Length: 239
Image 1 (spheres, rainbow, N blue to C red):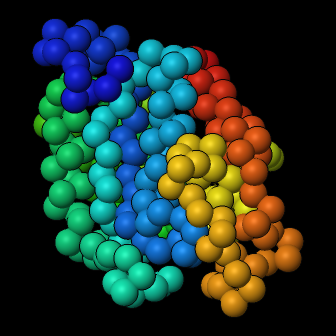
Image 2 (image 1 turned 135 degrees about the vertical axis):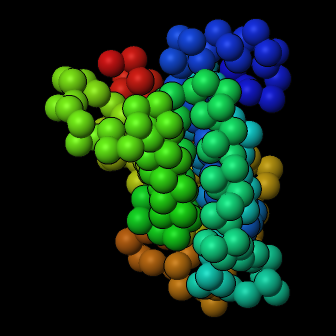
């Protein structure tokens, strides 16, 4: 189910049943000349789409803009940068909104720079502080030190920030920047937006790594990786 197409009664029901909520996050960044600038976001959204076909869950609207630091390029090649301090208030607002809808199993999925990059870190900090505030309101200050947590207590996991590349999906799934992995993902997710003819011997170094050439990418490889990720996440949520 996609949150933006759900009716109020469906949202209340999903929250009451503690269905997992997936929040895709990403950025706008140059990925060579052959790929769209939204690669990192498109990958997460595609895994979410495939998960939704396997398992009852709620897919929240995507946060498309995030920190890039202009590490790969400047705006002349399509990169945008929303600094972590600028993003923090918005991240808190989105996550607070999901909590107020009643959801208590929120998983933020990220591909861009993994779980330790500025994008993921911003959402992690925002989420953890919101959970602390929530517990203080519901259980009072000193809530964690008041009593031994019960077995299976998942308070600190109400909001998680995770790499969309699930550990049990790798291999075959993996990550890079516009190399064989990411180009394969894009061929499988949106082949008409990829132009392999724009790859050249004088292109960006990250497209020319001999162990992971962008030109070696295939639709089949992308499909295999997407399916592995979707299956791994379905297994975790169903467990």
